[in-house]
Image (tube, rainbow, N blue to C red; front, top):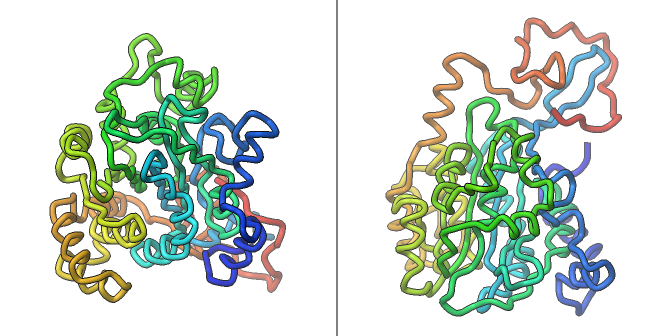
Length: 376
C-alpha cells in the first residue's frame, strides 16, 4: 500500500529525489513561479479544489467490504512564518520532518498521522499563503515543502498575515476526524501579531474567486459583506481543531498580548528555538490526547535531545493548555460508537463507522486486492 511512515530511508530518498545538491530546498518552488507566475497546485491554496481533506484510508476487499489499512486519521496542520528573520523556516521544516512525524506519531498510537506543513507571509508579498495537502509519506511531504515560496519580504513590527491560513483551516478543511466527533491539531508559528480583520480581495487572491462558494460547499456560510474578524475565525477553528499559537524566539513585545486576545492564554505556548518545533508539538498533542502527563514532559524532552533549560521552559509553558481535551472527546464518542482501528472493516466507503467484527464474512483464503487505497 505504499510508504505510510516517514522513515530515515524514505526521507533520504525523498531528499535526493526533490532537492538538487548545492541548491536551496525551495528552488523548485521559485522556478515554478518564474515559469508560470503561479504557485504549484500542490501548495497553492486555490489548487486541488481549495478544500483540504484528511480522510480515512480504506482498501477494497474481495468480500465487498473496505479494510482500514492504517487507523483513524488525525490531521496535523502547521503554518510557519517565513518573513524577515524567520525566512529559513522551510529549510528547518525539511530538516526536522522525520522528528515531526516520529514524535507526533508516538503521541497518537494506532492513528494515521496526516501532515500539512505550510507557510505564510505578508499581503505585500506576491503570495500570502502556501497551503499544501494533508500527506503521510516522505516523498509527498518533502515534495510539497520544496514547492513553497518563502519570499521573506516582511519583518519589523507591523504584523503579518496568518489570518488567511487560519481562515483556510477553519472553513476550508474537511476531515473524517471531525465527522466522528474528534478534533485535529493546528499550529501557527510566528514572532509577530497579525491583523484583526480579513479583506475580501485578499481572500479571493489567496483562495480564488470561488472561495465563498467553496466555504458553503464545505458547510460554512460566510457573508462576503460581513467577514468574520480574525478572533471570530479562531473561535470557529477551535470548534474543529485543538489549535495553538507558538510564540517563536524573541517575539516582539506586542506579539503575546495580540495572540492571547485571539486564542486565550491557555493556547499560547513558547517555542524557544524553531528547530525544536517537533518536540513542542508532540508534547502539546500528548497532553491533549492523554498520552503523557505533565510530570513526564521534561523527561520526554530530555530523552529526545532537548537541553534541560529549554525542557523546563517548555514544561512551564504547556502546563496550562487544555490537558486531556481530546481524551474527553474520545470518551464521549466511545459511549455510543467504536472508533475504527487498523484491521476494521467498513460496509461502504461513505459510512462513518466500522461494522461489528461478527459481521465480517469468513475468509475464503483469497488475498486482499492490491489496487490502491480508496479514500472515504
